Image (tube, rainbow, N blue to C red; front, side, top):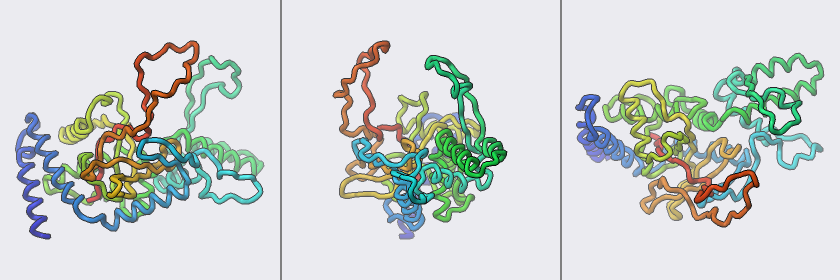
Length: 367
């Protein structure tokens, strides 16, 4: 095994020599050599069994999905079970018995935020409103957006004397914050933290790009043999997934037509240039929790997926690598509901009917 490891490292160094030796203005050979080296490194790790940390991360994510009771999305991108959402109370709560707090969607979301920010979590969350919308009666009336932190609302609520009304108002503020503040990165941070990972090994954050860029920096450092304690490296999407890995997508309009490789290269280039730019900002990651090799499917769990902790089944290629194409077999061609009379017909428009058809671009692999 040690001989094999030395061979793999040697291959990586040889492949990356051109990448490291050329100046910043080098041409296309540099990124090609770099990604070839990274793919070799990623494939070597993917050939090994899942490690204990990956198993803990996957199990915690599964337990959170089960506790939340969220949605289930099949391999064709169809939502076949609609579960609890972030703003809901316990399903079928008739008020005749006490509710378990971990069966409340919004309470679960606040748990993730508390794990990330501690007692100061409320000041990190946004609550939105629209000027005079609560009293307006004209549906075409325009209203300016209002913003506040949940913390500011909670402090104002403390002036309410009635204890039950005060508690209801507190919960209303937190439920609004659960809806108005994206929490998918807080969910991933919670899962990784619960698995026992320290801050020096993972960039706990409320934005996925923080640990995505960190994983890219780790891959670059590994090529130079200077990697630190970070537990994730950035791998090309066409890498065999293991439980505990993260698979990530983006929603950048400027990159809508770019392939997954071009998106990865943009991030690498920004880091290589020493720039503070983080142009791939609108991102989302999910935890790989199960690989069904026989069926060529991989299951992921993500937070804030259709306003819930949801489980998703994705398609693997014949070699068990992740495919960027997840369009499924659903068809929107049979959707014949007429458009509103005032709406102009969209000639030739093709609706995206698969919830799995996203801009997946990178696998963050446990090292």
